[in-house]
Amino acid sequence: MAQATELQSVSDNRKARHDYHVLETYEAGIVLTGTEIKSVRRGQVQLRGSYARINNGEIWLYDAHIAPYAESGEYFNHDPMRPRKLLLHRRQIMKIRTELEMKGRTLVPLRMYIRGRYAKVELAIAQGKKLYDKRSSIAERDAKRQIERVIKERYR
Image (tube, rainbow, N blue to C red; front, side, top):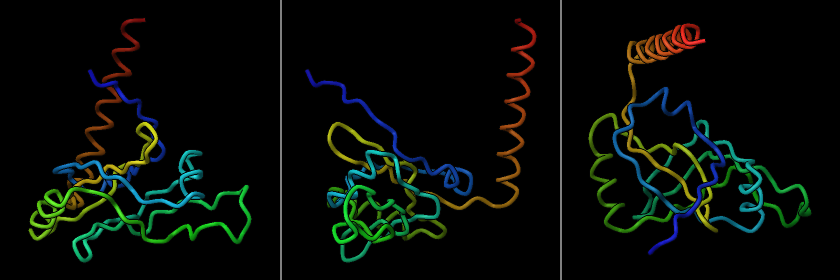
């Protein structure tokens, strides 16, 4: 029987869920250097504004900021904004490519986490929301908060 691996969330891209309708998600490994994985384990990752693209049959993550590791010297550190290769099966990449060819679809990272020993990125095929969709999402969220507040007050 396989062991349940514990997930340690490192970074969430909440803005992506606000700006896009998430259609399908994938778990991808990420190629990191030694100082990058140390910064990831400390949670020094920012995914806001990052995106992924397919180049030459490989998926690359762009504009994800992984802070330089403070304890290493300047010579051994990494560029915080460098493109990083994502690891997926060939069939998954082909499926993602066909999905992205549809109008208005994009590939965005939703979160980064540690599973076992490895850093993983949750990618989503997403479609952009219109302004009225964003407003309705905000209205729904506010209504849920109000309902929870009323229920909490009632059962005290």
